[in-house]
Length: 138
Image 1: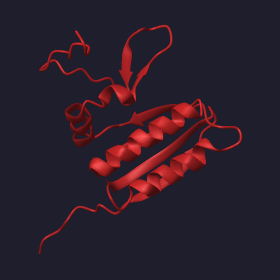
Image 2: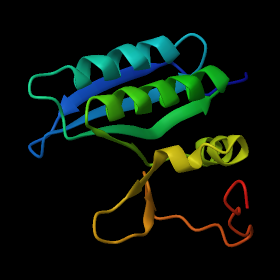
Image 3: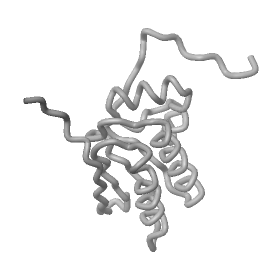
């Protein structure tokens, strides 16, 4: 008997006492589910009052394909337009890899006020195996 991982897509949303909206992403973020994420994020961002931060809990995300990445970028754009910060919490290794390979990791990096240092949307992560990329145009 063969078993396959449970990649059933599901979203659960909540607002915490700090005014942060949270969306837990479970399963594959792909062609079939990307639109569901953007709709859920849009609904959170249009709440009255709007959230200070939109946090996507990615711990149970089993896959993110190119359309999933496009959805994350769309959510980032909409959060920014609504004056909210987007955080990708508990990023799995496959999502980190996708963000690194596509050069989009910086889009999902939050700069803490007064620190001047970038903090990933999840736990602090340093990749010492690869030197930082020089700024474009240099």
